[in-house]
Length: 459
Image 1 (cartoon, rainbow, N blue to C red):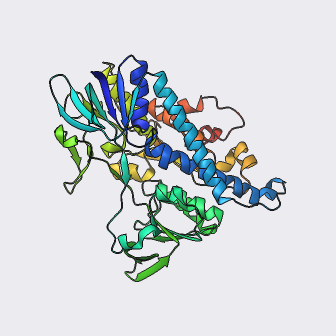
Image 2 (spheres, rainbow, N blue to C red):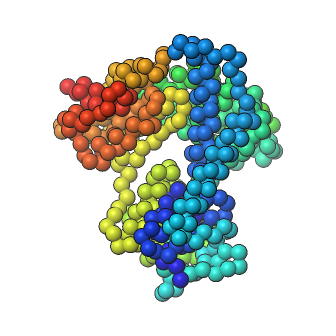
Image 3 (cartoon, rainbow, N blue to C red):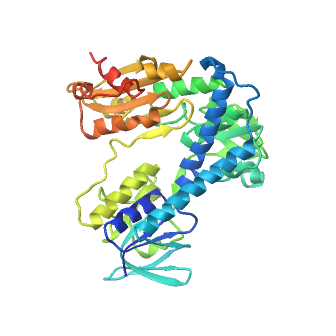
């Protein structure tokens, strides 16, 4: 009898397993593919590895801006992808060592929940049986692929985030259906390498939840670099290697590519592991359709002893959210008071320039009727940014309460904002005001100083 059984070895599952094992609980972790889940094997890490190679290539092409001459700069598509595989393999190995160090029993295979009793829960995997007092479901999500007419007939022209990471040749032309984070990161990668990229998005902007001003700035940046954006366009079908869509005026348009990346979001994995045998309540969307496992702020389901974390909840589908949710679940199993908070979850888009944000946007503040103020500065107010980003554009934008100037949201565009957004997360978590933020000492010269400089612009 294990103290805890975890289904899924992604960021929610393996982090929870490590924390629980280190705390002295006996843990069994089931994973049908590879430890690290989608994030490490088919998402976060491999895409960032590719994007960094693209960034290095971009630097060599424009090295003369920094007084450096690079002759014959070229890409080796195969070598870029081999390096990606090496990075993934190394990190997967690291997680295996972490699990071994925490004395977590890792079982590779498809686990099936077969039932529950007064003592706990029963699970089978490859004809072996397991029992546990507590159960944590971290089965993650998969790419949502709408049933576009002609999609199946298009064959391997159609790719999701999984297949596009296994390409052996660089496509000359790529059509991306969906201008969200995944779509924009692949669009940025391939356009930098020289692929002709077209993004077809049904919304009036890319990166929907992103601050409108920053979304517009990033779009203009990539339009200058050659990406064609078709916004407010509804895909109506696929004809071989061609995407058929209606433009904002209702006219039928077509765009073709060697590959068509379908990137319109993700869907929680709720089937195939015996969830129906538990009677777990599911969260429903306005149309009454289930989109994830319903949990409370302690990551508990309606069934005592059953917890859920990560994408399977259908909410805040980010690796770092999943890890924190896994920690909250384990702490509650251990009897420690802990609850999940979503008011300062950071979001990052690893394009070049990077985009990062946390807390509410200006648009959300308006929608919620919050009395707020906006303070903002160009990234050029940071000496370090100017030194390292020749001709680079960027902005730091802080949303604060109108009366007390408490920090409600921070949104940035410019390298390396992915590495400094955590300072904004802390400010929001600690309910800091701009006056308190002004008293924090930031190292000089760093791009992070832009947060403090922006705070001083309040009127």
